Length: 252
Ligand code: ATP
Image (cartoon, rainbow, N blue to C red; front, side):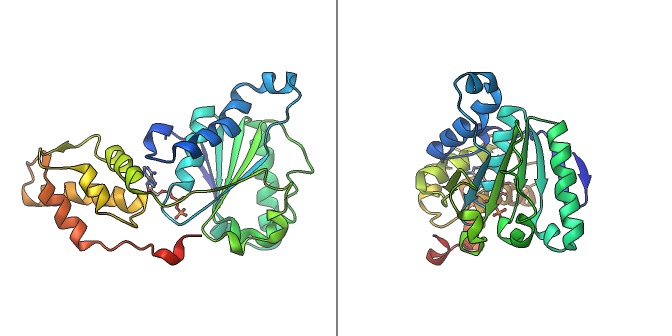
């Protein structure tokens, strides 16, 4: 990917299948992102204008970024990722210039998805960023935040984001799917029951489940560097050492 301060660009390789659970949400995003880009002429013949902005909100580590990347991959769109934290640290003029420049590049590289991470840290930049007043075909804005209540209320007004989607922490079924995704390149011992691990990992985020699988593999290797199989014992060792970061209070 090409990298300028605060922005990275590429076409991500993540696919919808790399995301466990969230089937309804994936469907909504496909309809909102993938279809208008893939079938742009059908939409315009129908006189339907595509969505321009979608806000994803929900607790950290639950795949907001990965969903945005999968949408870009599916639509084969250029993915411009802008870090809210980085922009927050810039001077107003500098941030404005970066936004304008990124927008110009996105237009040239269309279809493009502009992804704004930590959208709650953008408050004072958004006012310079009138993406809705400057209609551009083939550019979709996706923004993500862990703190929707901290977002500039002006942005939450209808007409800014066309769609506001909550990305929840995974339930047991979704956790099972996530564990399957992150163990698909591992050889699991016959005593490993992913269903049971899923049931015993309340409040774990997707990121934590990914970490659990990776660490279980590392524990197996630490035991024996020539090992190729991960057993239930390895999973349990790691699970017992982890405490999920999310609590009830994190769920909006
Ligand atoms: P943050 O708010 O902290 O930016 P996020 O909601 O954007 O977090 P991601 O960055 O998309 O979360 O996810 C972090 C990691 O967790 C990714 O590497 C991803 O592989 C994994 N992960 C999270 N949710 C899932 C899921 N549903 N299926 C598979 N992997 C997941």
